[in-house]
Image (cartoon, rainbow, N blue to C red; front, side, top):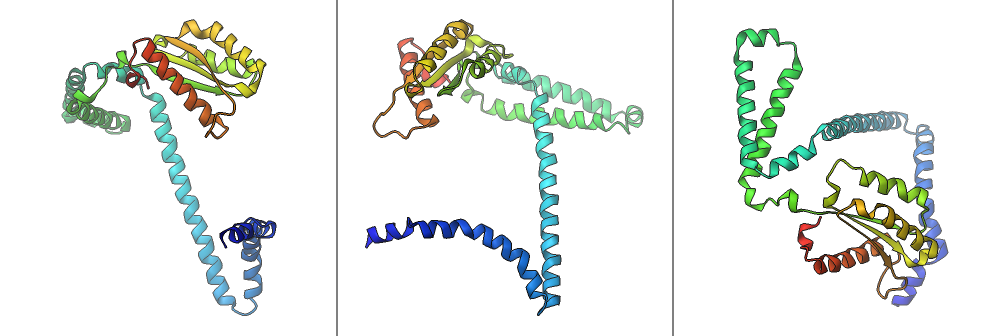
Length: 261
């Protein structure tokens, strides 16, 4: 009985029927108001009005979240992330400095003469709110300072998976990583390539490591064997295998894998 059910679900006509459902639903939505308006014109009019209002509300909602997402992205792009890493080395000192800066800003805002002069400058109030947010963030971090890892002791692992990409595609990405505004001696670069990519892929991986490997704290190329039992062919299996090989290499070099992100 079970096998018959499976054959019925996998039947071509059933698959084709499911493929037709979205198209049929679309045509029904377009044609039904025209046909139904001949019998129930008022009801169809209310339906069309409601339908238009629904999509108008969805468009407003989408526009709102687009603007909100853009502001978040812009704020993230303006954030000095490297300075935040430096703050983690001494959170208490950073919090005290933020508190002092916020208090000085508040004293200036409390001056009626100065406030009157700056009343129309909304960026002043925006900057003060940013100072309050920064102080609150550092206060939370200070309460959990025993759980914070020292950024200077952390390695950042970048695993780049490749199958049959050419050097023209691989090299710009690796070059951008090597020229990143971050201490590259704390970056571990792993180029994970597929055995089924052929000799050309292996040669490209070897050339990339020879050319850029010295610019990182550690660099290695890992070949993912083809046909491992229990694996599904794809990028995920390639990266997973490379991560396991990297963990072995870290143990051999006396490094702690838990300090590698």
